[in-house]
Image (tube, rainbow, N blue to C red):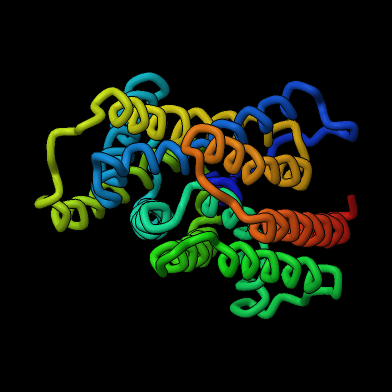
Length: 320
Protein backbone atom coordinates (compact mmCIF):
# COMPACT_ATOMS: atom_id res chain seq x y z
CA UNK A 1 0.00 0.00 0.00
CA UNK A 2 1.11 3.52 -0.58
CA UNK A 3 0.54 6.13 2.33
CA UNK A 4 -1.12 9.15 1.43
CA UNK A 5 1.20 9.63 4.68
CA UNK A 6 2.62 11.02 2.90
CA UNK A 7 -0.61 11.38 3.93
CA UNK A 8 -1.81 9.35 6.63
CA UNK A 9 -2.65 5.56 5.55
CA UNK A 10 -3.31 5.01 1.64
CA UNK A 11 -3.38 1.65 -0.18
CA UNK A 12 -0.90 0.90 -2.96
CA UNK A 13 -3.51 0.40 -5.63
CA UNK A 14 -2.89 -0.38 -9.24
CA UNK A 15 -4.16 2.59 -11.24
CA UNK A 16 -6.67 2.10 -13.98
CA UNK A 17 -6.73 3.89 -17.25
CA UNK A 18 -4.62 7.03 -17.09
CA UNK A 19 -5.61 10.09 -18.98
CA UNK A 20 -3.35 12.50 -20.75
CA UNK A 21 -2.48 15.83 -19.23
CA UNK A 22 -4.01 18.07 -18.19
CA UNK A 23 -5.40 16.01 -15.35
CA UNK A 24 -9.21 15.71 -15.36
CA UNK A 25 -10.97 18.11 -13.03
CA UNK A 26 -13.08 15.58 -11.08
CA UNK A 27 -10.25 13.27 -9.92
CA UNK A 28 -8.09 16.26 -9.01
CA UNK A 29 -10.89 17.52 -6.77
CA UNK A 30 -11.14 14.03 -5.23
CA UNK A 31 -7.45 14.04 -4.32
CA UNK A 32 -7.61 17.57 -2.91
CA UNK A 33 -10.60 16.62 -0.74
CA UNK A 34 -8.86 13.40 0.31
CA UNK A 35 -5.78 15.40 1.31
CA UNK A 36 -7.90 17.77 3.40
CA UNK A 37 -9.73 14.89 5.08
CA UNK A 38 -6.63 12.82 5.81
CA UNK A 39 -4.67 15.82 7.04
CA UNK A 40 -7.25 16.28 9.80
CA UNK A 41 -6.34 12.92 11.37
CA UNK A 42 -3.51 14.37 13.46
CA UNK A 43 -5.72 17.03 15.01
CA UNK A 44 -8.55 14.53 15.52
CA UNK A 45 -6.13 12.17 17.25
CA UNK A 46 -4.89 14.99 19.47
CA UNK A 47 -8.48 15.79 20.48
CA UNK A 48 -9.26 12.14 21.27
CA UNK A 49 -6.05 11.84 23.33
CA UNK A 50 -7.54 14.15 25.96
CA UNK A 51 -9.80 11.29 27.10
CA UNK A 52 -8.50 8.12 25.46
CA UNK A 53 -4.92 6.74 25.62
CA UNK A 54 -3.08 6.30 22.30
CA UNK A 55 -3.15 2.51 21.93
CA UNK A 56 -6.82 2.36 22.86
CA UNK A 57 -7.55 4.92 20.14
CA UNK A 58 -5.95 2.56 17.64
CA UNK A 59 -8.12 -0.35 18.80
CA UNK A 60 -11.36 1.65 18.71
CA UNK A 61 -10.61 3.26 15.36
CA UNK A 62 -9.81 0.09 13.46
CA UNK A 63 -12.30 -2.18 15.20
CA UNK A 64 -15.03 0.22 14.07
CA UNK A 65 -13.50 0.48 10.59
CA UNK A 66 -13.41 -3.32 10.33
CA UNK A 67 -17.10 -3.54 11.28
CA UNK A 68 -18.12 -0.96 8.67
CA UNK A 69 -15.96 -2.56 5.98
CA UNK A 70 -17.27 -6.05 6.89
CA UNK A 71 -20.78 -4.97 5.91
CA UNK A 72 -19.53 -3.64 2.58
CA UNK A 73 -17.25 -6.60 1.76
CA UNK A 74 -19.48 -9.47 2.94
CA UNK A 75 -23.05 -8.15 2.66
CA UNK A 76 -23.23 -5.39 0.05
CA UNK A 77 -20.66 -6.46 -2.54
CA UNK A 78 -19.90 -10.04 -1.44
CA UNK A 79 -16.31 -10.02 -2.62
CA UNK A 80 -14.57 -13.42 -2.90
CA UNK A 81 -12.22 -14.38 -0.10
CA UNK A 82 -8.49 -13.94 -0.85
CA UNK A 83 -6.29 -17.02 -1.03
CA UNK A 84 -4.63 -18.34 2.10
CA UNK A 85 -1.20 -17.02 1.11
CA UNK A 86 -2.61 -13.58 0.34
CA UNK A 87 -4.55 -13.54 3.62
CA UNK A 88 -1.30 -14.16 5.49
CA UNK A 89 0.40 -11.34 3.62
CA UNK A 90 -2.55 -9.01 4.27
CA UNK A 91 -2.42 -9.94 7.97
CA UNK A 92 1.30 -9.11 8.12
CA UNK A 93 0.52 -5.83 6.40
CA UNK A 94 -2.16 -5.12 8.99
CA UNK A 95 0.28 -5.76 11.83
CA UNK A 96 2.85 -3.41 10.29
CA UNK A 97 0.71 -0.72 8.64
CA UNK A 98 -2.05 -0.54 11.22
CA UNK A 99 -0.93 -1.85 14.60
CA UNK A 100 2.76 -0.92 14.60
CA UNK A 101 2.38 2.23 12.52
CA UNK A 102 -0.54 3.76 14.38
CA UNK A 103 0.73 2.71 17.80
CA UNK A 104 3.95 4.62 17.15
CA UNK A 105 2.21 7.54 15.45
CA UNK A 106 -0.44 7.99 18.15
CA UNK A 107 2.19 8.00 20.89
CA UNK A 108 4.26 10.42 18.81
CA UNK A 109 1.30 12.78 18.41
CA UNK A 110 0.61 12.52 22.15
CA UNK A 111 4.18 13.56 23.02
CA UNK A 112 4.64 16.09 20.20
CA UNK A 113 1.98 18.06 18.34
CA UNK A 114 -0.42 17.58 15.46
CA UNK A 115 1.48 20.34 13.62
CA UNK A 116 4.76 18.43 13.89
CA UNK A 117 3.05 15.29 12.57
CA UNK A 118 1.61 17.19 9.62
CA UNK A 119 5.05 18.52 8.69
CA UNK A 120 6.95 15.26 9.19
CA UNK A 121 4.51 13.08 7.26
CA UNK A 122 5.60 14.85 4.09
CA UNK A 123 8.93 13.03 4.37
CA UNK A 124 7.44 9.52 4.16
CA UNK A 125 7.86 9.10 0.37
CA UNK A 126 11.51 10.14 0.64
CA UNK A 127 12.02 7.75 3.56
CA UNK A 128 10.54 4.98 1.42
CA UNK A 129 12.78 5.88 -1.52
CA UNK A 130 15.84 5.89 0.76
CA UNK A 131 15.01 2.46 2.22
CA UNK A 132 14.45 1.08 -1.30
CA UNK A 133 17.94 2.32 -2.12
CA UNK A 134 19.42 0.67 0.99
CA UNK A 135 17.42 -2.58 1.06
CA UNK A 136 16.88 -3.32 -2.62
CA UNK A 137 20.01 -1.59 -3.95
CA UNK A 138 17.93 0.20 -6.55
CA UNK A 139 19.98 2.45 -8.79
CA UNK A 140 19.18 6.07 -8.08
CA UNK A 141 20.30 9.03 -10.18
CA UNK A 142 21.61 12.25 -8.73
CA UNK A 143 18.21 13.99 -8.89
CA UNK A 144 16.64 11.25 -6.79
CA UNK A 145 19.43 11.44 -4.21
CA UNK A 146 19.10 15.23 -4.08
CA UNK A 147 15.38 14.90 -3.35
CA UNK A 148 16.05 12.43 -0.52
CA UNK A 149 18.74 14.73 0.92
CA UNK A 150 16.37 17.72 0.82
CA UNK A 151 13.72 15.76 2.71
CA UNK A 152 16.20 14.59 5.37
CA UNK A 153 17.45 18.15 5.92
CA UNK A 154 13.86 19.37 6.21
CA UNK A 155 13.07 16.69 8.80
CA UNK A 156 16.10 17.77 10.83
CA UNK A 157 14.79 21.34 10.86
CA UNK A 158 11.29 20.26 11.92
CA UNK A 159 12.60 18.03 14.71
CA UNK A 160 15.51 20.19 15.82
CA UNK A 161 13.67 23.50 16.08
CA UNK A 162 10.49 22.39 17.85
CA UNK A 163 9.47 25.00 20.49
CA UNK A 164 9.47 22.90 23.65
CA UNK A 165 10.75 23.41 27.16
CA UNK A 166 11.16 19.65 27.68
CA UNK A 167 12.40 16.69 25.73
CA UNK A 168 9.01 15.04 25.28
CA UNK A 169 8.24 16.86 22.04
CA UNK A 170 11.61 15.82 20.62
CA UNK A 171 10.91 12.19 21.54
CA UNK A 172 7.49 12.49 19.90
CA UNK A 173 9.02 13.88 16.71
CA UNK A 174 11.55 11.04 16.60
CA UNK A 175 8.71 8.54 16.97
CA UNK A 176 6.84 10.23 14.12
CA UNK A 177 9.91 9.84 11.89
CA UNK A 178 10.22 6.20 13.01
CA UNK A 179 6.59 5.63 12.01
CA UNK A 180 7.59 6.65 8.48
CA UNK A 181 10.16 3.84 8.46
CA UNK A 182 7.49 1.36 9.60
CA UNK A 183 5.17 2.58 6.85
CA UNK A 184 7.87 2.06 4.22
CA UNK A 185 8.39 -1.53 5.40
CA UNK A 186 4.64 -2.03 5.27
CA UNK A 187 4.66 -0.86 1.63
CA UNK A 188 7.31 -3.41 0.77
CA UNK A 189 5.33 -6.24 2.36
CA UNK A 190 1.92 -5.49 0.85
CA UNK A 191 2.49 -3.73 -2.48
CA UNK A 192 2.12 -6.88 -4.60
CA UNK A 193 -0.91 -8.42 -2.91
CA UNK A 194 -2.69 -5.05 -2.69
CA UNK A 195 -2.78 -4.83 -6.48
CA UNK A 196 -4.75 -8.06 -6.77
CA UNK A 197 -7.83 -7.07 -4.77
CA UNK A 198 -10.32 -4.17 -4.57
CA UNK A 199 -9.51 -1.45 -2.06
CA UNK A 200 -12.28 -2.37 0.44
CA UNK A 201 -11.03 -5.97 0.58
CA UNK A 202 -7.47 -4.90 1.36
CA UNK A 203 -8.61 -2.36 3.95
CA UNK A 204 -11.01 -4.84 5.57
CA UNK A 205 -8.62 -7.73 6.11
CA UNK A 206 -5.80 -5.49 7.23
CA UNK A 207 -8.11 -3.60 9.59
CA UNK A 208 -9.24 -6.90 11.13
CA UNK A 209 -5.66 -8.07 11.67
CA UNK A 210 -4.59 -4.68 12.97
CA UNK A 211 -7.52 -4.36 15.37
CA UNK A 212 -6.95 -7.85 16.80
CA UNK A 213 -3.26 -7.07 17.39
CA UNK A 214 -4.26 -3.82 19.11
CA UNK A 215 -6.26 -5.70 21.80
CA UNK A 216 -3.31 -6.74 24.02
CA UNK A 217 -1.67 -3.33 23.52
CA UNK A 218 -4.83 -1.49 24.56
CA UNK A 219 -5.16 -3.71 27.65
CA UNK A 220 -1.83 -2.29 28.85
CA UNK A 221 -3.66 1.04 29.16
CA UNK A 222 -6.67 -0.40 31.04
CA UNK A 223 -5.77 1.56 34.17
CA UNK A 224 -6.11 4.77 32.12
CA UNK A 225 -9.64 4.04 30.89
CA UNK A 226 -12.20 6.43 32.32
CA UNK A 227 -15.42 8.21 31.54
CA UNK A 228 -14.59 10.95 28.97
CA UNK A 229 -14.51 14.49 30.31
CA UNK A 230 -15.29 15.75 26.80
CA UNK A 231 -17.70 13.07 25.53
CA UNK A 232 -19.03 14.91 22.47
CA UNK A 233 -15.58 15.92 21.21
CA UNK A 234 -14.05 12.51 21.95
CA UNK A 235 -16.82 10.47 20.33
CA UNK A 236 -16.92 12.85 17.38
CA UNK A 237 -13.17 12.68 16.81
CA UNK A 238 -13.13 8.86 17.00
CA UNK A 239 -16.05 8.64 14.58
CA UNK A 240 -14.34 11.06 12.19
CA UNK A 241 -11.07 9.12 12.38
CA UNK A 242 -12.95 5.94 11.50
CA UNK A 243 -15.36 7.11 8.81
CA UNK A 244 -13.64 10.14 7.30
CA UNK A 245 -9.96 9.23 7.54
CA UNK A 246 -9.86 5.42 7.51
CA UNK A 247 -12.60 4.89 4.91
CA UNK A 248 -13.79 8.00 3.04
CA UNK A 249 -10.39 9.63 2.53
CA UNK A 250 -8.87 6.40 1.25
CA UNK A 251 -11.86 5.79 -1.01
CA UNK A 252 -11.63 9.21 -2.62
CA UNK A 253 -7.93 8.74 -3.28
CA UNK A 254 -8.46 5.27 -4.75
CA UNK A 255 -11.21 6.59 -7.02
CA UNK A 256 -8.97 9.39 -8.26
CA UNK A 257 -6.15 6.95 -9.06
CA UNK A 258 -8.37 5.33 -11.67
CA UNK A 259 -8.01 8.43 -13.89
CA UNK A 260 -4.87 10.20 -12.66
CA UNK A 261 -1.21 9.43 -13.13
CA UNK A 262 0.22 8.25 -9.78
CA UNK A 263 2.81 11.06 -9.90
CA UNK A 264 0.05 13.64 -10.29
CA UNK A 265 -1.87 12.21 -7.33
CA UNK A 266 1.22 12.07 -5.11
CA UNK A 267 2.20 15.64 -5.96
CA UNK A 268 -1.31 16.79 -5.06
CA UNK A 269 -0.95 14.96 -1.76
CA UNK A 270 1.84 17.35 -0.85
CA UNK A 271 -1.14 19.43 0.28
CA UNK A 272 -1.51 17.11 3.31
CA UNK A 273 1.16 18.83 5.46
CA UNK A 274 -0.18 22.24 4.46
CA UNK A 275 -3.77 21.38 5.36
CA UNK A 276 -2.67 19.49 8.47
CA UNK A 277 -0.59 22.39 9.72
CA UNK A 278 -3.39 24.91 9.15
CA UNK A 279 -5.94 22.70 10.94
CA UNK A 280 -3.63 22.13 13.93
CA UNK A 281 -2.71 25.80 14.30
CA UNK A 282 -6.26 27.13 13.84
CA UNK A 283 -8.20 24.57 15.88
CA UNK A 284 -5.67 23.66 18.59
CA UNK A 285 -3.59 26.84 18.67
CA UNK A 286 -0.37 24.85 18.35
CA UNK A 287 2.91 26.68 17.84
CA UNK A 288 5.32 26.29 14.94
CA UNK A 289 8.65 28.08 14.66
CA UNK A 290 9.69 29.77 11.40
CA UNK A 291 12.56 27.30 11.07
CA UNK A 292 10.14 24.38 11.47
CA UNK A 293 7.93 25.85 8.78
CA UNK A 294 10.97 26.30 6.55
CA UNK A 295 11.88 22.68 7.23
CA UNK A 296 8.40 21.57 6.15
CA UNK A 297 8.78 23.49 2.89
CA UNK A 298 12.18 21.87 2.29
CA UNK A 299 10.63 18.44 2.91
CA UNK A 300 7.92 19.10 0.31
CA UNK A 301 10.55 20.29 -2.19
CA UNK A 302 12.59 17.15 -1.60
CA UNK A 303 9.58 14.88 -1.97
CA UNK A 304 8.58 16.63 -5.21
CA UNK A 305 12.07 16.16 -6.64
CA UNK A 306 12.08 12.49 -5.66
CA UNK A 307 8.57 11.95 -7.04
CA UNK A 308 9.45 13.54 -10.38
CA UNK A 309 12.56 11.37 -10.59
CA UNK A 310 10.55 8.21 -9.89
CA UNK A 311 7.99 9.23 -12.54
CA UNK A 312 10.70 9.72 -15.17
CA UNK A 313 12.23 6.35 -14.23
CA UNK A 314 8.84 4.66 -14.50
CA UNK A 315 8.22 6.35 -17.84
CA UNK A 316 11.48 4.99 -19.23
CA UNK A 317 10.54 1.46 -18.10
CA UNK A 318 7.09 1.59 -19.64
CA UNK A 319 8.01 3.64 -22.69
CA UNK A 320 5.43 6.31 -21.81
